[in-house]
Image (spheres, rainbow, N blue to C red):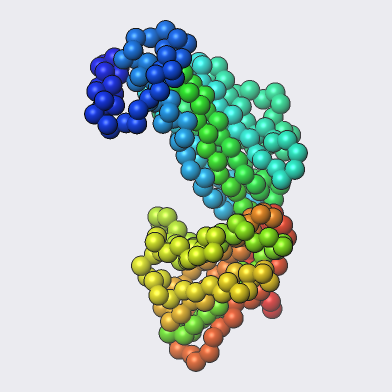
Amino acid sequence: MLLRRGRDAERHQKGGRFPAVDKKECKMVRGRVGMSPGWSLHLMVLWTLYGVAGAQASITAHYGEDITLGCIFHHIPRLKLYRLNITWKMQRAEGAALLVHSYYGQRDLWQGQDKVYWGRTQLDPEGIHKGNASLRLRAVGFQDEGSYLCYVTSELGTSTQKMSLAVLRKSEMESPIVARLGQDVILSCPFECGLNLQPLNITWKKEETEGPDLLVHSYCNGIDTLQRQDASYKGRTQLHPERFSQGNASLMLRRVRSQDEGFYICHVQLELGRFSVRMQVTVEGTGQHIVQAPRGFLRLGKALEVSPSI
């Protein structure tokens, strides 16, 4: 069946459904694995697609909780699992990357694992058989913040996936921001800025108990990017770019509705690092003034949950 797929891939390629494959590259792959032309073309297409799998994702976690860092790789029947190599690393702003977890020969390899992760990481053996190399990370701390890389190598090639993790501090006393129904509210998002604000990416989201978070507002490299903004927020949100140089990514939310109640997260990504702020909004009655959400304080690499002063 695999050989037939290889021939089908060859026919599709001739018909223009796949980009042309360089003959030298095909010859190189064929020479290495010793397969027929149909096989080598099939493998070459898989190799090309496999190597670019996975866009960067952002994950927000509470201090002390367990999380799963997702990593899906291309899987085919009869994949030689004994040759499968899975490596998780954490990139630091300075210095070499930390080894978070390693797997080869159908077993975990603990040698070289950074001591910060001792006893806190786990892969799912059943998931690996299904193309899932996701990593379970226990008792998340602030030292875990950063960018994570998942490398999966098999006979099909190598896949790399990248994601960033921000950790929110749990407030000892969490009081909600009270907004008036039908009025406007400003949700504060302070961050530490440097001389260079490029690139600058700002994302506001509302947490959902079921399903994915709602995109409230997005800003990328000088423009608002609202193509995927949730319909309930269209025409009701605004950032103030003139305040970015002051470390202010606050969001104006107009004409507050009852369904706006909930938890909001602001993510700021720039050259200095990544900052996150979380806050709760409740909606009451009617009013005539703008409600200013309390200002929080962030340090580089830390994410604090914002609550009003008492």
